Image (cartoon, rainbow, N blue to C red; front, side, top):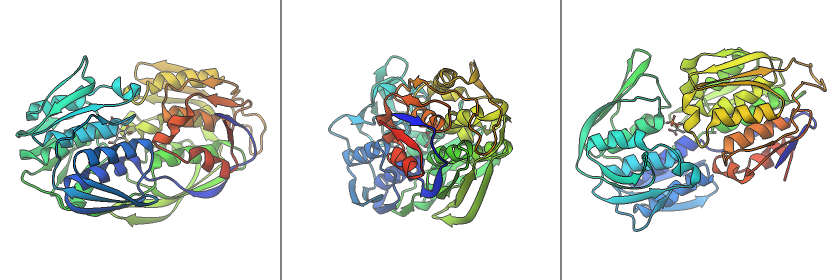
Length: 441
Ligand code: S3P
């Protein structure tokens, strides 16, 4: 797949449904008793795997129409008769393991080559403390078989800022004697806490210094609910940054989730001088959403506050692209978690940007991108050479980031394995084309 520089990007679009909320809607729907109806579900491969898994655990899962799904929960998980394959989805497998640990069943989990390489110890550690057991490959890698049931209460302090680990503990806590308690020194996305409440559970959240203390009392059950999935800010980031770097562009993303724990990228782009406007702010099903417009902007490099990392952890790859078109260095620190995502995203962004002629410096948990001088609206030369074929290791966000870069670089940029984009943003290429982007196979 190759992207090349063409005219300005113009248009209004809806981002696909939020991936985090989509996984949770299916899982909570299956754990609950009764019917859950979901609107705007992301129909990307990651989430479809979670839907299939919920069927395997005994829920009735039915697609009613585009993004419209009905889940008939049985109030618990039954033992699946085959292996659960979560594909590329770290969120899927970690949250489902947490949920499954609450029941006296055995379940075997696997995934694609990327997921089989990712650390599961971070969820196995607390689940083990609660009483679950497992057998797995060296280093807590998939495939693994988990056996749950008869869980004890836990008070778990997250060693790494991870919403997936927090969520796994809370979902296990639903069926643990006495519930569960999570202390997070740095706040991470809170969709599980919000959605548990929407499904009738009591969840107490208090501020604990800069972090949070979450208490899920024991003996609770969930009741099916209606879920309206907002647009994913992590997907919206790609067309928005594309508009910022392609001269003459103006793009609006409607219905984008504005959860304060997800908008670190918007704050950072604002600090860089991006022309962004947020309008029509409204509440949709317990989350704030809005329409966000981005116009081509003169960007300046910044130092990103490290404490902002959890609220934009999936957005650093596309921030790296914005930084390539900003004047001066952009310094990203405290981003070690990027190395254990779908790929080692620090290494792949450093390599991809360098191959496109951008100055980069990689540290163990940092990345510095030195941008080219601004050439002005309609300027022909931003000084980002492009002209590379980028290796993505099957990582959807590495692929989309470099395709966006190709829309504004001097020479075309190609990525391998573009099919993986469908894990999170199935219509990405078609959508960028309707905005005027030139991307083709
Ligand atoms: C997610 C949490 C983050 C994020 C992932 C989605 C979630 O992972 O990178 O894409 O839905 O809880 P970590 O919990 O590993 O930080």
